[in-house]
Amino acid sequence: MSKRVVVDPITRIEGHLRAEVVVGDDGVVEEAYVSSTLWRGLEVIAKGRDPRNVPLLMQRICGVCTYSHYLKSTMAVEDALGITIPYNAELVRTLMNAALFLHDHVVHFYHLHGVDWVDITSALKADPAVASKLAFNYCKNPIGTGENELIKVQQTVAKFAKNPQGLGPFANAYWGHKTYRFTPEQNLIALSHYLKALEMQRLAAQMMAIFGGKNPHPQSLVVGGVSCVMDVLDPARMGEYMVKFKKMQEFVHNAYLADIKMAAEMYRDEPSVMKPMGVKNFMSYRDFKVSRDKYLFESGYIVDGSISEVFDINEDLITEEATHSWYADNEPQHPYDGTTVPEYTGLVNSESVGPDGKMIHSKNINPEGKYTWIKSPRYDGKPMEVGPLACLLVGYARNNKVIKERVDGFLKETGLPLKALFSTLGRTAARALQAGIVVDYALEAFDSLVENTKVDKETCATYTIDNSKEYKGRGIGDVPRGMLIHWIRIKNGVCENYQATVPSTWNAGPKDAVGTQGPYEADLVGLKIADLSQPLEIIRVIHSYDPCIACAVHVMDTKGNELGRYKVDPLYGGVCNT
Image 1 (cartoon, one colour):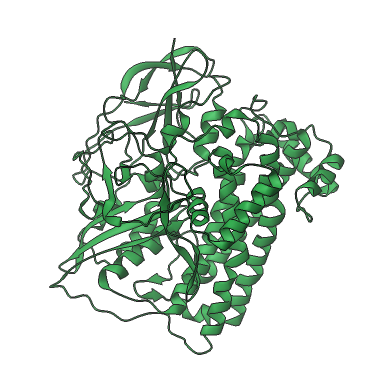
Image 2 (cartoon, helix red, strand yellow):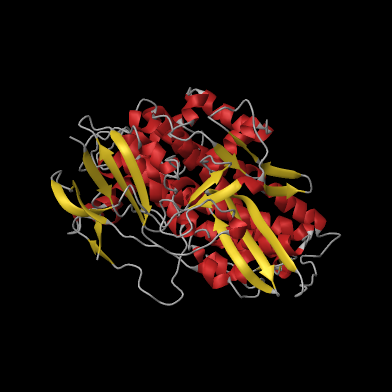
């Protein structure tokens, strides 16, 4: 008899997300539904405001992706007004973007996704001397893996284990799960890097603040360019950025990429990690300008997992629909004409598997109706995965030299076939490979900026807004989680309509009107769960996308009416709609 398993809330993400799966007697997922239980309201708040102020609001969509939304929103206004920003401003924006990418990818793997791969309790049983030697199998100059350092890591985590709350930040996880594959020594290596990554997180935030003024909400972007001209012209500030960047580069090569190679070695035969994807359409957009004619990432999309042909993107074919989303206006809409009218229908009474494996009464989604605050984006009617994997696959199909070298090099080192990229392991590896490209090539933008400021000090363009004209524009590009687009219409000098089509909307969107699933849901179908009371497999798949749910949802009731009230049960980890 089929059973329903609910994971709510999914933790170690940005925002609020719920996954429900229907599992057969064989433990294999037959149906999957992913629901966002959070809303925002910035699209509605933007209406009627001066478009130059809108980017400062849009960066508040999320506390993690702040710069991504700030940048694309600023670009949307610039596109609408026909502004070409100075070359210096483009390069400064790239350097800020590099700081964000490195911050985001390192934090994702170690602090959000890491314990899906790393068994912390196993690390406490490791032999530090053996682990120290083992680390050299994955890179020439490993970081944080000296025997004394590893002993200290064990002692630090052992102190957590002795306190009344158990393992502190590592408590209440599925330690000892059947799908963990690292040896105790490998777990200890990755645990050491987890702690080291906390330092790297701070370092990357400081890199952003050098040009942004502060972090996580930088203040230096303006419509027309950047306002941090004094920092750009200060050799000390520029040097500070480079020193911190080099430290990040060392960590990415000698910890992050090394641990991904270790994961590829040990998880290559784990079915829940290597299961083929449900959606094999991928889309990305050109980004990371490092010189006048060079970008690191390419634009395009591929279909059905074929890298033999890549297609150009026609933005007119992008739509969002709300058949299974808590909004009115179900029909597909282009974002320029998108509406944000809430139609909340709540959850229904049902049963699901409790944390002890027994059936319990619960509030579950209605699969026949609306069940999430996330819309269903489609390209020419097709679901698309966006993100680092999409970026690498499109770049590979475009014969991007750097991307091809990195992908082929990784596959050769690990002995994995190209088809292995179309999996949870491939998606996780792609994020690390993308970080490797950023740390090795983003400083080309730094060098370009230094050379250009010798002859050109301009950082902001002039422009005017004609209140008698109507404008529309979009800011588009690839951010750490994938392709992001902000769309704006301007009328009478103010914002008339605003929409954001974000990576986690593309990936986490529900079924559309014809029943086609988005990437999250499609990836869960066919997944075998070893223990229904410990669904680590579900969490590992979802985390591989690096969910940012605050970015993906958008609604508010402008009259202040209550749309729903939620009570979290800390014992069962469930959310009941009251």
